Length: 120
Image (tube, rainbow, N blue to C red; front, side, top):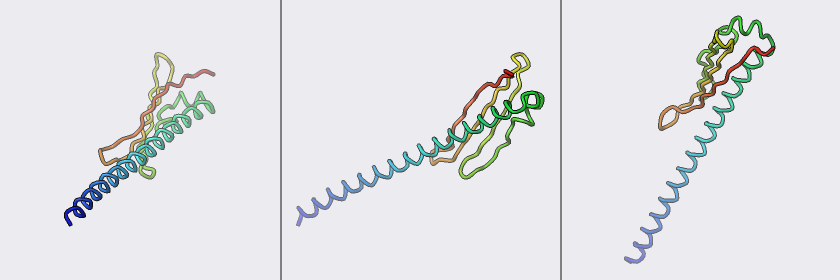
């Protein structure tokens, strides 16, 4: 009888360890997916700013705030923001995109930055 209880205890300990490991793996896979989606979304917002610059360079550089900035927008679990700053010395626009999402350990996300020049 004691041998059966000992074997059962060992089986339970192994199963608890396996369940914990699987739970940890699923959580990490979900985080990696969300992080990748946040980075892709940030890249798209950078590309949108680049396309606006390419389509109408004069209008883009004349009205950077109106042409480029994007206020905080919630889309699904993601919070997106694009800030554009014109540098009068270099005649370039710095674009900073932040895409954040909530996670158990706190907010996470992706932040990308690029500089757009008036090359035309």
